[in-house]
Amino acid sequence: MAFSNLEQDSDDVMGEINMVPLIDIMLVLLIIFIITVPVIKQAMNVELPQATTAPEDSKPETISLSIDQDGQFYLDTTAVSDDELRDALKQAVDGAPTPDKEPALHISGDKNVRYDRIARAMALANETGLSKIGFVTEPDGNAGTVDPASQGANEGGAQPAASAP
Image 1 (cartoon, rainbow, N blue to C red):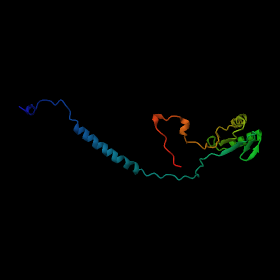
Image 2: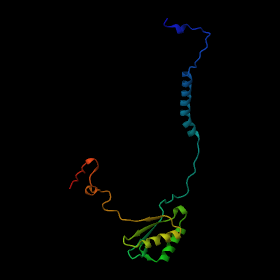
Image 3: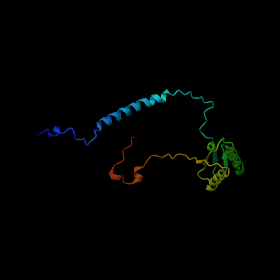
Image 4: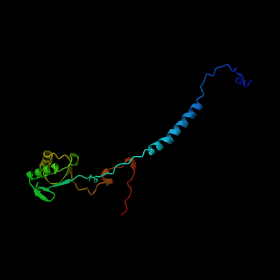
């Protein structure tokens, strides 16, 4: 008979649990929680205080130090000696409101200056506790361009694109 399973005794115990109703109930509960949680958060009426401080300037002060080809230091545009430079850097570090707001030293050295003068400026900055040091350079006029003749053969035999005059 094709429907022999339908003729089971009613005394037999089912060996499996039907999971479909359980999954249906869990999905309904999940949907209820998803809908009610944002409503509960918005129901809390909290009056936030107003800020009374002015916004802080996040850009730190910069100190511009130039070194000419003779090794002379210039703080901004004023010529200074080693001792005057040390005093000016110390004053700038001491004048910072917090250590994270300490000024940054930007060193612009002539390309022909001796390295020991740049090293001296860095040592003076280190002595005063100045740790943010940067070097200022001129951008290369050929930066970002590639001369195909100087590269030799291209990979894969591809020819460079012709540029318009």
